[in-house]
Amino acid sequence: MPIVNLRYLDYMAPGILAQSVLFSAIFYGIAVIWERDLGIIHKLLVSPANRGALVFGKAVAAGFRGLVQAVIIYLIALALHISIRWEPLAVIGVFFGIVIGSAIFSSFSLIIACLVKTRERFMGIGQVLTMPLFFASNAIYPLELMPGWLQVIARINPLTYLVDALRGLMIQGGQHIHRLSVDFSVMALIFLLLVAIAAKLYPSLVQ
Image (cartoon, rainbow, N blue to C red; front, side, top):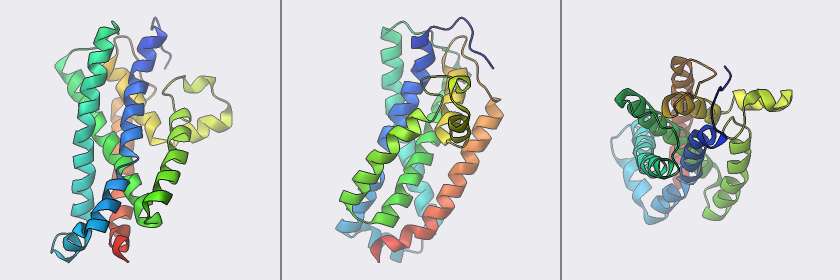
C-alpha cells in the first residue's frame, strides 16, 4: 500500500524506533554469557523450571526494556514535530509491537550465544548481523524500491513486519503493507519458533 502525503522524516521515524530495538536486543545474548560465567545459568538449569519458560521469561523481560527506547524515540519525534498518532489504542499497539519485536531479536541473540559460547565471537557475529537485518527491511525505504532479490529477503525479515506495524500505528498518514493482524501474527509465529529453538539449545551454554 503506498505512502501518500508523508514527509520522509515521518516515514523514517518508525524505522528508527525499530532500529534502536534491533541494535539493543541483538546483543542481549552477551548478558546470558555473563550469567553463564557467574554460575547463574547453572543454578537455573538445576531448578525445576521449564527450559521454555526460562527462555520465554528472558525474552519478555528484554521486550519490556525496549519500551524505554520507545519513550525516548517518542520524545525525540515530538521535538522534531513528527506527526505522531496519540490515540490510546495506537500507542498501545506500538508498545506491544516493541515488546514482541525486542523479544524476537533477544531470542535470536540467545540462540547465537548458545552456539558460539564466548563473548568475543558473539560480539563479532552480532555486529555482522545488525546492519544486514536493518537494510534488508523497509525501515528507510519502501519495498517497491528494492531489487527483486532484496524484496524476497525483506519479506522473510521479521524487522520488516515490525516496521510495517509501527508505521501504520505510529504516524499520521502512515499506511502499512499488510494488515496489522498479519504483521503481529507473523511476529508471534517467529517469536514462538525462536523460543522453541532457544529452549532446546539453552542447556548447551554450560557444556
